[in-house]
Length: 623
Ligand code: FAD
Image (cartoon, rainbow, N blue to C red; front, side, top):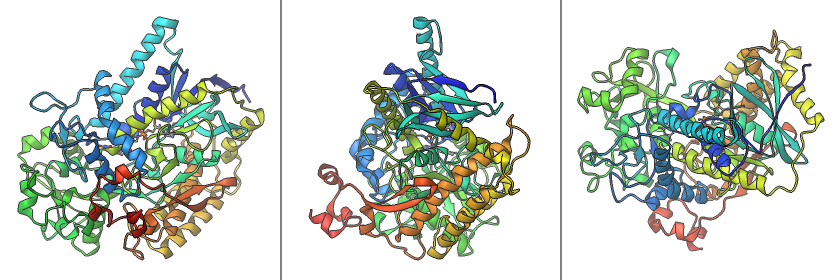
């Protein structure tokens, strides 16, 4: 074997989406020698695909908005299962993180008086999403990258080397974390192009690897979202929470088949788009759940008046949280009132002049024209649910983003708790900024406080290398592509939007079988750009994480947010007090119930008692 390439840093950030970049900027600003690693090209992350906007209670469009209202909306959206401290920090700090982006060079759309414009989104009481048309994620990534470059220029001026304190390694996949006596010591991985192995020695690692959507067949997620960070954390001994909660975005494209699952932004509904079934009925009025009845209109006239007079009218039910809308679409299709290709109709063409649609939703206009030959200024779109986001992730300390493994931090979609059982649109981009910054600071202060640096032993490195090359030595003849397709189908069919015990039991059996077969996956050729090998390594992560989803979903015998049980349709206040915590000692997933920390009284006091009665147990209300 050629000699192993080695690098040494203080803080290693795995992932160059919004969370990773914000963490890296913070760690570097705290004086840490920081590296950012990403599987794809620098700049190509989920974050860049974000369309609608970043939620922050700046009150620019409606001055009644403030952090308390944002906190309340987030807790309601997550059906009170959220980690309340994370929801509090998020609501309080999001505005500063958005304004800070302007100092990095971001240019948001403006109100007429020149402030950052904010748009409506599901579950947000006031217009709250700062945006750049429907390409907000692009601006976010662009400005974070610009900040990285400007820090590198400062470093050049001071040290003569651009990369002396902040260096990016792109098209690089991390396959294992390296530990020293239970503490993080570094990470091991390979260059995707050459297949050559690299060891990064670092006492602190921030996981910012995004989601898990590629375990499902129909998804808005792209190829990189194979749950790597979730699996790395589990294998290192950290725990995952809320894994049963997977968000199915209500509006993905359903036709043609080659684009099934691609996202249709919620901004279409935020800006006035309505959902109709094959009878032409605006059906969402039939699906407003009891807990939201006082906030959502029960007739079209009031819903339409809300766009111009939100203070005296209730919101249109198309703007209910995503879990509610996705279930409603699912029910309409099941009842035989769906569109030709198994979706429903999302219409903006009858709601706004064509020029306005093109101005506000340029990407959607382009996407439907190019991919489906549909002109959204004249025709409705056909849409249906698509796996979009995982609420579950690494259990972290809210203030520092530290996991239970010393030196391991997590931020963004890979972390869990912030969104409870269901994330509100726009709350991910703000989450990335708030907790990315906190993770960078947390990692920096951890490193600063270390008495000695952990060491990557030869034994640990050899073990990681052996695991990485195992697929070349497989003798069972299993093909990684076949296994991946079978996994996606099983997750879609058995642990999808509507769940039943028997199906999830079958899913657990299927996953066991796939895991056994994956042990004899074989890939051909050599390590130089070999997508089959890459997939074989990703598959290990997808299987582990899917097992967490299926096992936790089977245990939670209630319906809440992104977890809908046909056999347990109601929400159960006793379950709100419990977290399902996944660990994988020795590689086998264990799921145990742990109590959820009670909400701090001053935060609870932000809600009316009548609302709390819908979520809390009698005992909690009396306490
Ligand atoms: P990501 O941006 O997903 O980045 C993950 C990074 O980790 C990538 O750089 C990847 O290459 C890297 N990585 C992964 N595994 C490895 C590995 N093993 N080794 C090395 N690197 C690795 N949210 C909103 O709030 N508002 C919106 O309008 C919005 N619109 C969306 C539209 C679409 C189409 C999609 C798919 C999502 C949208 N979301 C939106 C959700 C939001 O974009 C994501 O949740 C968020 O961007 C995740 O950011 P992140 O920083 O956690 O991870």
